Image (cartoon, rainbow over all chains, first blue to last red; front, side, top):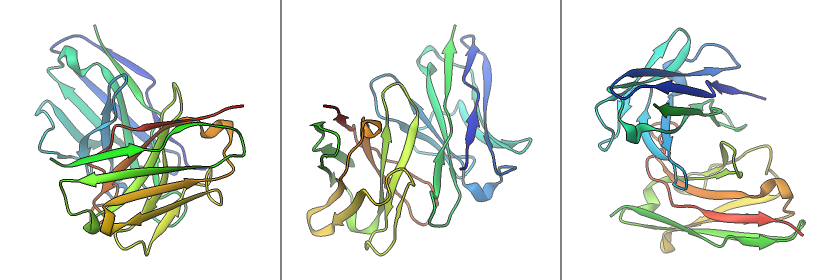
Length: 112
Length: 120
C-alpha cells in the first residue's frame, strides 16, 4: 500500500516563510506524479492551490508556490498571513487502475 | 458560478445502504471526469472513486471496491455514489470534485460535502 507522508505540523511567524514537503513510499516524487496541493480550514471543504507541481489556480495567492525538492514535492508559503493557518494536503497521481490518486497525511500549519 | 452540491448523507446502520448525489452547475458537466473523496472525523482526505466523462473508465479505492458503485447522468448533470454493506469505518464527510482528465489529479472544484454516519 502506497503511503504519502507530510510533516504533521509546522509553526511559522507572520511574514515568515515555511516549506511543506510530500514524500512517496515508492521513491522520489517527480513531475510525473503531478503533485497537487490543497488547503483546508476547519469546517470547510478543501480548496485547490497548486496543480502539476507548480501551477497555480486563478485564485491562488502569489505567496504560495510549488516545486520539487530533494525527491519530494514541496509547497512554500512566503510572507505568511494569519489566514494561512490551515491543514495542507498534497495529492499524488500513480496512474493505473489501483488507487491512481493518493493523498498525503496532511500538515497543520500554525501561524504564531 | 461553477458549483457542486452533494446530498443524500445521513445516519445508517452497519450493513445498510445509502446513495449520495452530486449536482453540478455552471459548467459543461459532460466534458469532465469526476471523483468522490471522503474525510473521516478528525482524519485526512481519502480518494474513493473516479469516473470518466463518458463513464467508460471507473476506478475505486481498495477500501470500497465491491461495495460502492460510482455512476453519472450527464443529462441531469449529476454524479452518484451507491454505497452498500456500509461499515463503521465508512463514517465520513463525502465530497465530490471535478477532475481535468487531461491533467492528472487536477481537482479544481469541490462541493461542500455531505455527512455519512454508520452506526447502530
